[in-house]
Length: 116
Image (cartoon, rainbow, N blue to C red; front, side):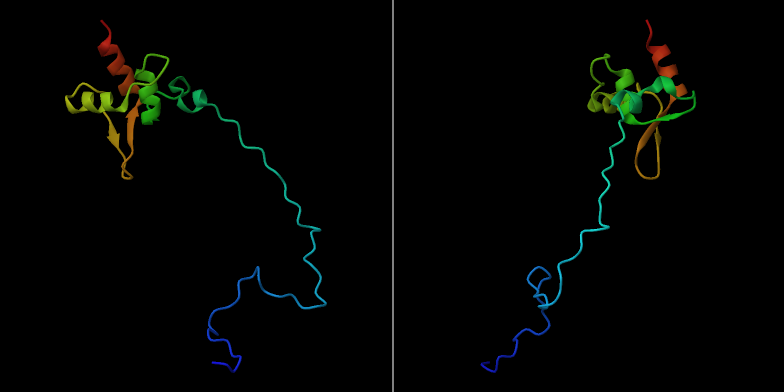
């Protein structure tokens, strides 16, 4: 194929290697300012604090495990799963998306039952 024709006409040159016409100016940077956004400051305590919920609120597993933990670290998920298997965990709800939730009132009942 010495005719000079492109052997692969269906493949276009990448945009970074495409040639600009001689009279074309580079793209203008005016009007393309980027506004930096500051990320919202969310603390872990705020997201997992069960004290700020209503009695029938549905708590996520992170909140439940922190509430059942020793105050320094959460209860291991494997321990909670073992308690659930033998019937010693608070009642749980399984949502259609597979997530597990515990009602705040059920967690409180469970903790009262654990008191000695």
